[in-house]
Length: 201
Ligand code: GLN
View 1 (cartoon, rainbow, N blue to C red):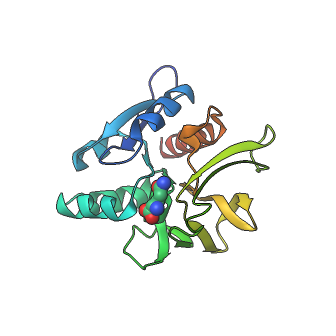
View 2 (cartoon, rainbow, N blue to C red; view 1 turned 90 degrees about the vertical axis):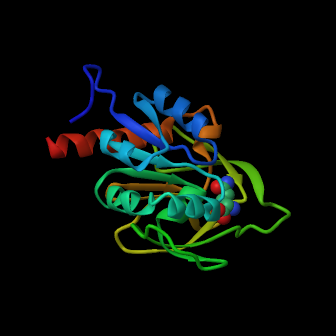
View 3 (cartoon, rainbow, N blue to C red; view 1 turned 90 degrees about the horizontal axis):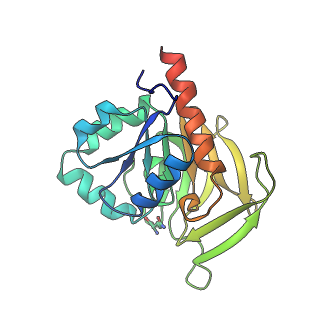
């Protein structure tokens, strides 16, 4: 139990690559205390983790080199983790285009760079299952979730494919919520972390 008096859980942002600062700012606005995580031992002091966008292959290279992968693997099986874009690729059980290893905690198949060069980056307003009306979704060389298992809840879709999914303590988005002003997705994750803390205490 690590929340302070204001009930702000301590949530890490994996800060070895990608847009981790924007996630840290978004977490602060969403009611959490962010911590930039650069070393495996820092995982012991946080209640949840965001794996940001970037390049999933670069993440894997860094994580393997620093012996970080084992510690992260055991963290994501137990504690709330939110993967955005490359982070979503790292959480999925199966990765295509091309196949690559992953942490395999989200029962989903994800195809990398699935939208081709013409529309590889875009901003759309979409209906979601989050309360509060349409949400701005920013896509940057986004992957596509092509298959999900029965335990995965789909919270938003694009062209019939899931773009925001939740499975137990795992949340994943193929877009970049940290680049929009709307904090509903980060708030959803902070709530997930709070629930997990109260279940453990
Ligand atoms: N194209 C990247 C990958 O495959 C993901 C892009 C992103 O995170 N914005 O890892």
